[in-house]
Length: 193
Image (cartoon, rainbow, N blue to C red):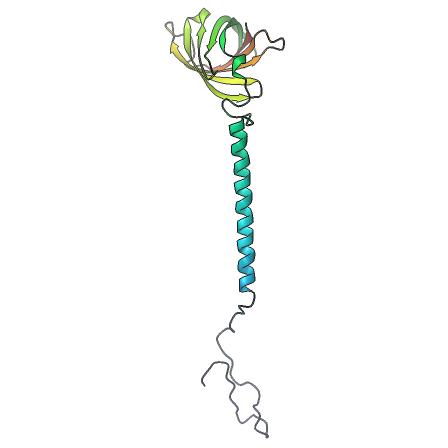
């Protein structure tokens, strides 16, 4: 037998010499049709190309939003720098995790031109530190506070200061948030003018 699909005529064949029933079967699978192979390939390429085009367009739109200033969750996003630049001072009211009054203290905050850096002094506690803009959203700016001086060891090493304009435009609302060495969350709020 030359090929697996060949049929041998045997004694079971018809009397007229026509082949009889198949007596052997091929063990190899029939060849796959290549008729639709190029169509499948084109569909896959079209699908991959479409997905890539959508990804490129979405990435481009996001990049434009960031460069134009439309990304409100990024550093320096929608906050108008002029609203925060300058020196501000006021009294802060500090409460613990349960909302119990802990202390009132005087604070002074200075925000440099560009509103990305500044300094802070917690006058009542004789502490001071640096401020670096870490996030902004809408009309709020969030600064990371890092302590630079604490001669009486009364202050936290790190805190977060959130600033936003007062409704009357005459000052800034301030919220300090920190965790003490003992693990107690402290929040201080007040108005800086």
